[in-house]
Length: 252
Image 1 (cartoon, rainbow, N blue to C red):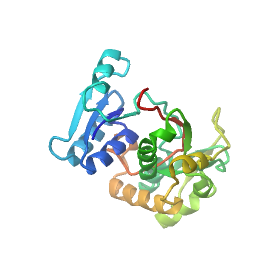
Image 2 (cartoon, one colour; image 1 turned 135 degrees about the vertical axis):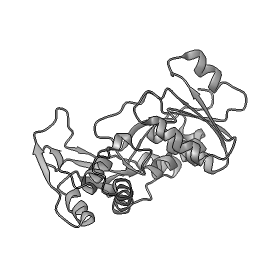
Image 3 (tube, rainbow, N blue to C red; image 1 turned 30 degrees about the horizontal axis):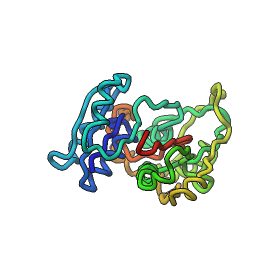
């Protein structure tokens, strides 16, 4: 199978790409590489790709002729479109908390710390995309919420803080500041439609995902407090819920 991943050097796109590479498929990554640090994700992919299986095209999705020539080429079986995805400030906050705590730096918490979010481990997100593609006869033209759901929800500081302090074996300093404009008090995904249509639900629980992410943070920091998440290649990460994911059919 030949799979094209637009935005394939991004966090989610690179994880989708590597899963298909692991299964022995050919993957072409299409990315403009304009976001800071994404070239490290591409290097990460290249280090894991079997010889001859990974291709890379640098370009902009606004270049209609280039996109048409790529996705319309003979032998292309599947296209995942992640380029030009809207990114919110909330994405990556869990990894930021982990890195900051592991480096023994103070955190800044906005609002009262009781804002609730459901968390999803990236492996579960990739599995959702693959299952949706496998059941394209059912998912084509539909929109799905994909997130951790109620079982994997947590308040961003009131409930997460004691978990972090257990990992760190000590108190974590935090500065409390006012609410940010537009900050949602509660966001928890309703994923029942995804389960009904293509049998998907999260497998990695909240605490397991947090433990795995903490291990990554410890390996990454290793006492080097100056490390910043934006500079690091492709962490295993708990992501924010991916809401309103649409799937197009073969004729789209």
